[in-house]
Image (cartoon, rainbow, N blue to C red; front, side, top):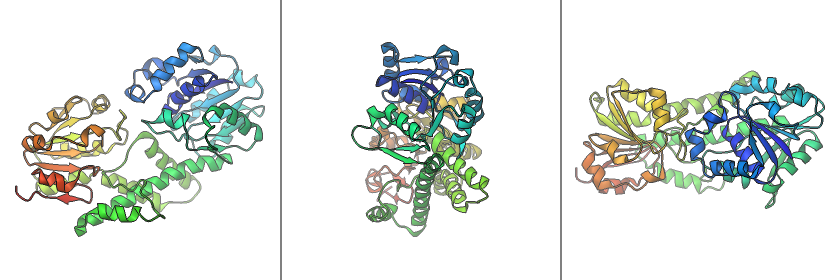
Length: 430
């Protein structure tokens, strides 16, 4: 099929590469806000496993053409929209191109996270001679290629048989092992995507509340987590307490779901609480640090491991580290931060500061002269550090584990003070 992909999101890049890989003739038009010349240099795209290589291979094979103007390609069979929520009006204007108005029988695939009902509104602009489906973006950074080419499910929102038939053919190469399509009406698919992330966020925030209670009662939350997860009605997924979630997609999906509630005249106290709890939890490590030093943080140096909102990404959108930095700086503390990928994004946001030194190579360099270490992002390279070395480097020998990846008793046995999320351990001898 002839396919036009429009957008500069991860979902656009992945769709362009994957569809070309299986033989479709793809023209990819990045959004003008982030043209290919800029997009190709972004850290998140470079680090996404396999994606850059697949894009280059598709171009070399001739199945993928990256274009700058819509008139550089013939009329397509499929238009694949993968835009950010802020680009919704651009989608409406773009779909009114004469290329589509003069063409018959095209299928619009809305892969963007827009308000519920937006696929129908886009279809009205696109033209009655075409058809449309909602195919909500369910990709995760760090595993986008695998998720697209070996999907566990696709939410397929369509109201016409021809749209379903065309999309099934478009994605047939990725649907051979099992039936992965869940067909439903367009609006149901759009709402389902938001509801899924709302449920996941609710589980995380609930577990964080339990971790806070465990701290107060002197209970190790790991015992509670194991007991809850063993209940078949609950399970272990998204049941790990931490110092808050972030990210561009997860956070904006929650905001989008809250907006849908508000627009429908329904106020969601639950969603408000979920988001409030998450913002509060981003301060958890700071509060533990404050308590340990009795509020005397001025002049102290704190090491931070991890700035990205999750491992294997360069992004810091809504990341907990941003809240931590502001709190530490407000108290006159200095920060030495290491992240293997997200340092450029952080420096671009906060600029050059005398109270921030960043590192991307040696995590132990960030600990030199520091009083305590905060673990914020659970990069695999942080899971098994040299504890003897950390004991020598950290003046107060304090480890603040924002992801509960370390064993408290083992850390304490190495002569360090451990404080996690609902977990703690002190060395037998100081």
